[in-house]
Picture 1 (cartoon, helix red, strand yellow):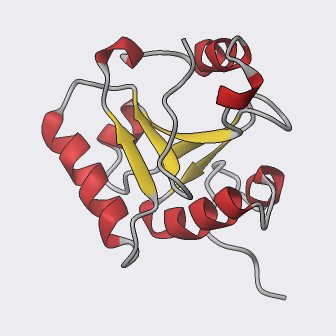
Picture 2 (tube, rainbow, N blue to C red; picture 1 turned 180 degrees about the horizontal axis):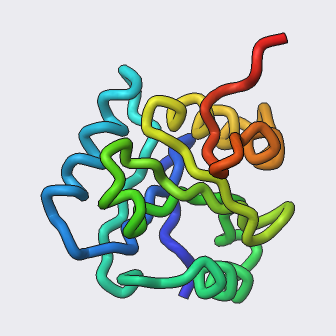
Length: 140
């Protein structure tokens, strides 16, 4: 079964940790508050509970080409427990399995640029800090 499809020009935010409903609500609120426009298609389906990145890659690679997506954002246990609520962005196409953490304030920029094809996943991942978190591009 293919991964769910995001709404047009939105990014898929897939919940994989179902341990705390209040935390999930906080994640959605933080992402919605990060920009005046919606950039997320939220999916909370228990079939994805504790699913690994590799399982997501396997599921997506088995989908028909027209049904495949190129990236997604995962709300995992780190997202739910870290007060900053960083999502795990996952590349599904160019470098399948490559990840980078994304705090909610950066989600609209990354989501918009990836959904429009203005930038590649690697550009954001390459700009991550030592913790593997994207916190903007370094100023020259």
